[in-house]
Length: 295
Image (cartoon, rainbow, N blue to C red; front, side, top):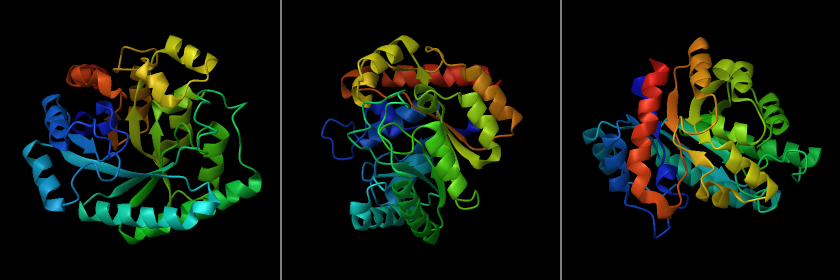
């Protein structure tokens, strides 16, 4: 497992490729390598250079492998079908050019859902008809990705309409495992009231990519009480380096070993841009935690 530990650009506060406060892509690769990681996710489309030779060479000299790319698109919004599919096509074309073989698919953020961390009961929901329309859109994205040789993995996340346990189960039931795998973000599922260990046991081999976060449960209680938006919650310390929070991450690793998990473990601890001075230190601590947990 230790040779497949990666990190993601969100650790540097990178959520939008065009944000002028982002650190340079070269700095991200350098610090990921220095902290002992073997892989990097691409993050938002356009942050890393699109020239495949340039990025692949930069990763190679730093001992890094690109482990996955992603799209975050509001495919639950039927009115945006054409633009969603066009953007998906552009991202898939870029990923294929970089030699990436896995596409993480997130249902994009909707303002009415963004402040419902851990609030499955009160969060706005789609009608059954709209859920089926969403699945049709998702299948269209999968078709596009397959055309570029990409394996698609659903990434449930905060702010979209595939977040809570019943929403995940609906989509995974509607689309077969041969077409759609699962990227399980253990932090996100914990934040939204699910048991990561039970989810790993439920989906087993369908899980082909793991995101690891740790969570400060006191900060989570405040985020739920105050109906905080995701970016505000993590800026207040909701997400911690691995081992500093309250999740049972050693048990998570134990259960992953039990199902013979062979994919990447991707460390994510979201920072605001104001906290970038601690990124390398935090990444090293998370890497050290995993070294001990996996041994």
